[in-house]
Image 1 (cartoon, rainbow, N blue to C red):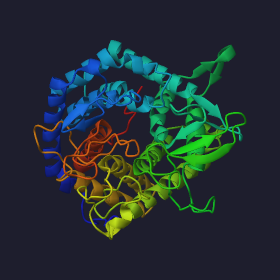
Image 2 (cartoon, rainbow, N blue to C red):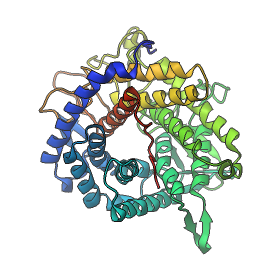
Image 3 (cartoon, rainbow, N blue to C red):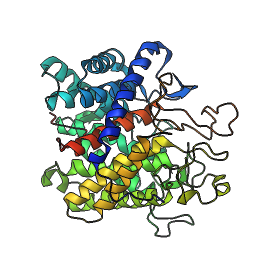
Image 4 (tube, helix red, strand yellow):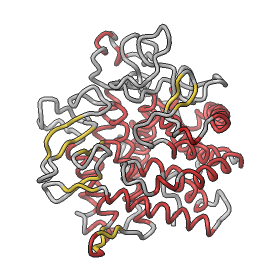
Length: 460
């Protein structure tokens, strides 16, 4: 359980945040100098060097998006150039990639950040570039929304790259691109020119995920613990009926893969913020503001509480809450996570994602006058404070990663195990580094009382 620091405030992290961005800039420049885009997207490090891993191309946007976040934080024009040129040269295929559920990762991190920076006045207004970004985001939103499977209750979900039967917890964060597409006035046209609302698909996907990937302790099955998350839900594509939980990257369907848990915490927290920008009339036809908000808030609270309960004392989780070797780590829930143990790896990337979700949920609830918001904010800051220091912050100039001790796919054995070690440790991931930057940018704005950071900014 996280030993929540009740006294840390965003302003207390200013020195650590400044050091973070100094190291971050070095890592971005080193990767840009050495990585050949023709060799595939950088995914995770092996012996400190970023390598590609063919599965799906879901991490390219994090590479160029990281440069844009670095510019946002520091104003250093070198990183704006890297992010802009990388986006314009290498991201076009991702806009119309019909084979993945990752549009909110690749395209919001790149085209979305570019458009946000223009809208927020951080970069000069460029009508041509702005129109290009809007077009890319509208196309991306429509492609993402088109990956649709209908459920027996009349709802549906954006299906994963596994196929139409598969709903991933991860995809809740790809709803960001549907939200931006809706803000830009776009809609999906299907057969016979039938229009499909991007907002409707966003809400329906969020409902299905909340209903099947998230547990609420209501006795749904023998492992129904409030806040537990199934990485994958399986549906019968013939009639849309739910069949069973599953997992691709977790230990089992009946345990919680902590990065999937983190996606849920952050995804719903952001969508709750987005709901507040919509008119009641837009939501009335989808069940009404109160109903939608309650659905998202129940999922966000339950998973945030579960994360707090099952992360280690310093806010860093092990890769799966049911990992079979955890019992060998006596009292692991009561101590800081040990990335150098001999039995089960931690996953710092899950903490990079979840800490922002906890902070955002806390800020949202505090805005609503809910006192529990303070608990979530402090839990998120506690985890971020851990990430901003060693042994997680990478200070070695020869290591291309920024946040150490990330795990990609433990069941498949894809993660590097250093010589003399029994489990993966000491390596970084592109998504972990990106989300650490996003969380640190968010906390930095809170510290300086700057405009609140949202994924949509001042678009359109």
